[in-house]
Image 1 (cartoon, helix red, strand yellow):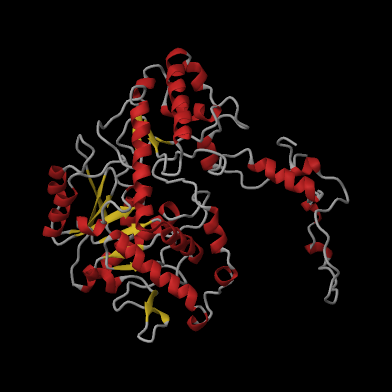
Image 2 (cartoon, rainbow, N blue to C red):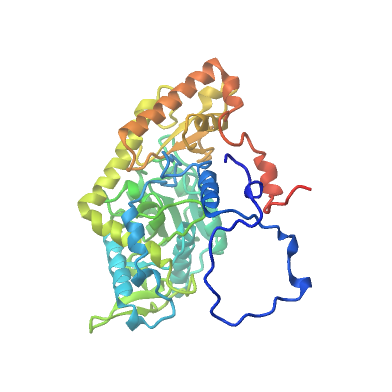
Length: 479
């Protein structure tokens, strides 16, 4: 069928299903002026309909179909078993408004997940309510704000390193603070001199991504925590890259007061495409009374119930978060256990450093040190031949690979950010490296080949600027 539209396949009278006999009284149609005769919906048989959408899906990349090396996104393969568990009727058919006594199993799962996430991160309390990573960021900083206001402190600034996730400045602004950038040093760590120059009693918190978006562990972290706390400020960790640290270090032991996690990156939920997420927030004991509502508590009689923390900053979502994501995370943690979680981080780090070793001769490595879960290269060498990172990414599509993240982090010129994740085999990584090395050779010998890529994709280079400014959001039949 190729890429023919469903309208091209339509034939009058064909249907994809047979409706049962009507078991309710029939009713008159609405007035003619309310009927939309112009819809002209396609008419297909069931096999044609299934094949049409299946063929459409094959035009796109997917983690089930191949390697998805987007840096800072953890686009890994997740066990299909956890999808089945999330669809169990006792979980999938729950209603958020039903009485707690009728959902004790679900509440028990949430309670245990809160405890496990606190243990994994070295924190004291957890809120499961935030609906995504950036939502968890916002929840974290609003929790800090509520804590400071309760103490009667009025602070106006939040420090954000230039190696942090790009959503951190937006979180700062939405929380009512001024964002103050902090530069990195030549090793990719937070520059302690730059930090000292902007750290004063008006700073409410510092938002630190660990590992940072360079894929590096900040070697100054203990001193940073000391400096921040000496000024009475709090230290927040963007924990979106937690899969690099599982079982290796507890973020609470490093001096963090609050952090957000991405269950949809680290703990077994398919990520991307705007799908559901969850961004639980973990805090030390002094922030626990200020977490959002609701939390799950265990009562003296052993039953589970929702509770509101004493000085809660309020609700972040109408109910209690994305429960299906929690089921998957619970299953992931329980099936792997402590040793399995540690192996996740070990494999993620090994895979990223394998790519670093294989590609460092062909692409510039801006920070000459071991990385953690992802590696950031620069396409600056290829630029000398008129080839940019964007061209390299597009050419990868001709080799059957989804492009990595490009032009981020902003502090790396012509950045190529690659995260192999812990689930990819050596054979997959070798095939990816062979493609990247071949592209580096093409950049030297046939740069025009890259500038015109992709050559084999269903669509060539799109006008992304126009698409962002004047998107076409509906199909209209040509007349």
